Figure 1 (cartoon, rainbow, N blue to C red):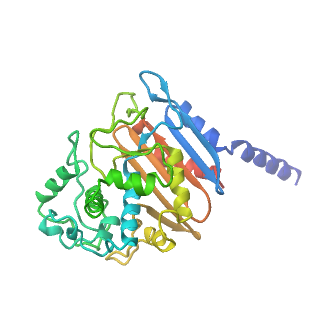
Figure 2: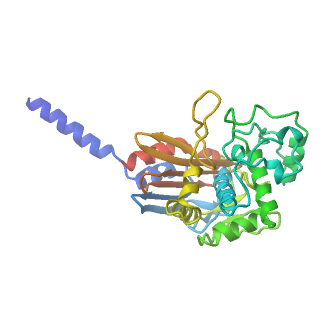
Figure 3: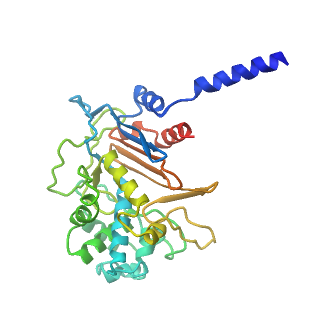
Length: 338
């Protein structure tokens, strides 16, 4: 029996010494060259980590600051979805409207695709990513490419297939209804009300002071270079994204009913629920609901993870993209919040 207590004590001590804090996890990734960027972590509605590691310009050794904007890639889709829901709340559109009602140069094969299907990636609209790679790519370039395609990949509403092209169409809908650019709409209706002072939609003549430069794992420049909006196009800071997190938890931008719809996942043809709502991947397990999204393009990777049942939030932005193992990092940080 004595040996049992000794072994139990050693196991207990071992467990205590191997558990890590969020700071220790992040520092370990930084020291191994796997993370250069900005981190914000909240637990039970309280920020427990808000810091930066490394450089915004690796070659000139210009250090990162909390106000350094990073390109957030597909995290932009959450903003697009919110903007669409804001227009719906004001009666300017219905989620079940056909997109062609507002974007009349859609190809004929897409005339019965609805706004809701674009939001939850069940439209069948083909994804332009990896097909169109030129610098300076615009929304109009993508629409012209869609016009050259033979049709949808599947009947709308039957399957989930991630489509950046669909979110570009949503951006065009926002512009058509509002009469202003996507950038102006977000600034007026999201960035300014939430005082997201370091968040910007990148346009051809946009100057973003002190923004992070993108690099690959070999520290070669791999910066953002296209001009599409809706699917991406936004630079932001971790602190600004946390403002968005708080706003969605407290219904500052949308009604409680709209927030619920934002996280609602469609039922697919095979009878299963999709794992994507509107601008968010949704995970339900053990009585909790997680809304999360990642983003990645050129030398940038981003992570926005939110436990909707409590105040736990994990935000990570990096400008050394393919050096950062996003999901390994997420799993390691989640373990520290238990």
